[in-house]
Length: 291
Image 1: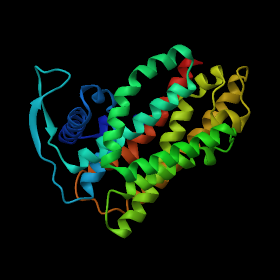
Image 2: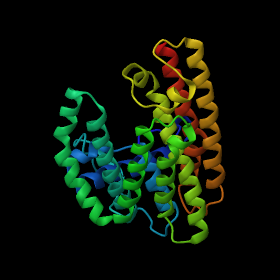
Image 3: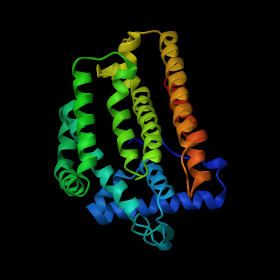
């Protein structure tokens, strides 16, 4: 995941933001404990959200305590203690990061490939450990990666089709957060739209770079863009993408409202009803500055 599923800090109360940071720090610690210090560099907002959602759907209460920050050892910060929610998210992150690394090695130029290849042994060790703990997650993500590669191989121009593997995988992963059948159906739908959102945000964020380097991007193919496309043509693409992303967020939020949340409700609601929208606006404002 890529850091698009995050809260909108100005609308969180101080205690809520401190709680969010404590889960974030707890996940950082779990990544280090499970896979080594370097794994902390893969920490993301997306998996912090997934972790909080996991807590909110279980009977497991997070234990908060102060400990030294791994980035700044002179500072003590509140953080969650080890838990199944943290272990699940750390394992899933390790599996996803490994496949993302393989994609980078395959898609980038010679020097970039060489750089990514240096990291492969470390990511591979983490992947094998995570796979042994979460074979179901590995199966879901592997299926998604293979489906995505096939779509890119044949240059699928449908945005809906291009986002399907990631959306379906996220739906299945979210479904694992509960054993209740009703909750599972809701989670699968919500996760589907969050996965679609993440994929489309990433494609929109990379649009200019993908155009320049001739890389696969469904927005480029769908709208027939090229390097020399005028600004107004690109603006039409950005407007269409924004509309699609806003609709996708709305569907995820509708499903979320049906869940039986036991904790962190203000923070999770902030992410779904404000933070994700702000992430889209940030991507678009960045494009305006580039042009």
